[in-house]
Amino acid sequence: MDSPVPPRPIEPRPRRRDRHGRGMRGPVAPPQVPLSSSRSESFRDLVRDSVDRLERRWPQLADVEFMVMDVPTTQEETVPLGSSMPANKEQPARILVFRRPVEIRTKNRDERAMLVHEVVVEQVAELLGLAPESVDPRYGQE
Image (cartoon, rainbow, N blue to C red):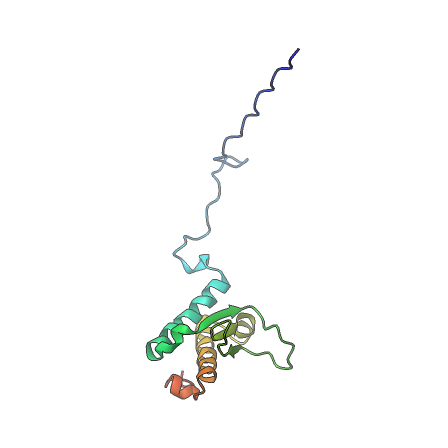
């Protein structure tokens, strides 16, 4: 005798209300508001703004890879804010900006934006073999 096939379990309906009878919570802020971006995303935006500003003056920077890392991996006595690596056969030139050391040294977004730009200018100058003032004439004036 064949055993009957058990009925398929009923899938639960999506919940429209929580257990207190209120609706499900939505996002704290809409996506277009700066609150909804994380600290690392807003830091990346600062680096991108700085790079865009420099690429207008130095088109060869389009071939340079700009990256953001949380902390440096080297165990040096002083903590660097950024580093640059020249191009080789395997990879293009790279400029790294370290997020946590920059954030620790600044108090607000404006200070952070200025320091990020200074770090990017210094690393580009090192990569190109120029003085930071020639990479960006406003370097050190802000």
